[in-house]
Image (cartoon, rainbow, N blue to C red):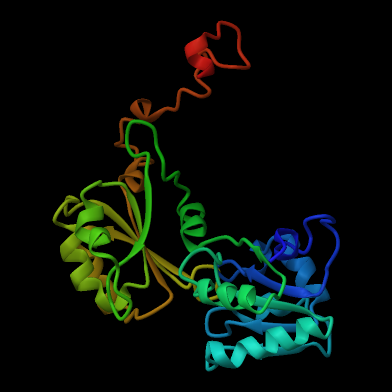
Length: 280
C-alpha cells in the first residue's frame, strides 16, 4: 500500500478526502475533542460511533441527515463492509472511538482489515481518561524526585495480559499507575498492588470522566475495592495509583519535588552559563 494513501491528509492538512478516519472522541466531554476531530465530524458522510462509551453530546456537530450508526451491538465483520463500501463510493467515514485510539480501543484489527482491503485511513488521537483524571485532580504524574514513570495497564480478565505484564510485576516499580478496565476484578487488583505499594498510597477512583455524572473518589489503596463495591462500579472506571496524588498536600516536603527546569541556578540551552553537559 502507498504510504501516502494511509494518511489521506498528508499532502494537504485541510483536505478531507474519502477515507476512514479513526477518531479519538476523548473521555466524554465534547469540548475535549481536538480541532481536527471536530472538523471531521462536521464533514463526515457516515459516523460509526462506539455508542456505549461515547455520549450523544459528542455528536452535536454532525450535519443533519448524516447517518450515525451505533456499534455497541455490531461485530467487526458487520462494520467493515460499511466502511469499505462507503469509502469506495467516495464518502468520508468517521469511526468514532472513546478516549484515544491507541489505548484499549480494538483498532488494531480494524486497521489490519483496512490495509488488506487497500482502503485509505487515518488515525486522529484523542484525550485519554488518565489525562483528564490528572487534570481534574490537578496533579502532575511525573514529579521530580518522587516519580518519573507512568504505567498504563489493566488486570487480566476475559482479555489476558502477557505474563511479563502481570499487575504485581508492574506494581514493583511504584510508578504512577493508571489501571483501566479492571473494576470487575478490583479485589484481585488491590491485592496485587498492595504487594508493592504501601496501603496508604493515594488512589483516585474515576468514574465516567467527562460525562455529566462523572465522579471521583480519592482513597487509600487499602480501601480501593471497598469503595468500588459500595458505589457499584462495574465499567467506565479508571484507577490512578500514584505517590504524586499526595504531593500537593500541605504536609508534603514540596521543595524536594521542584523541577530544575525553571530553577534560576540551573544552566540550560536558553540561559547563560550553559555547559556541554547541559546541551546533552
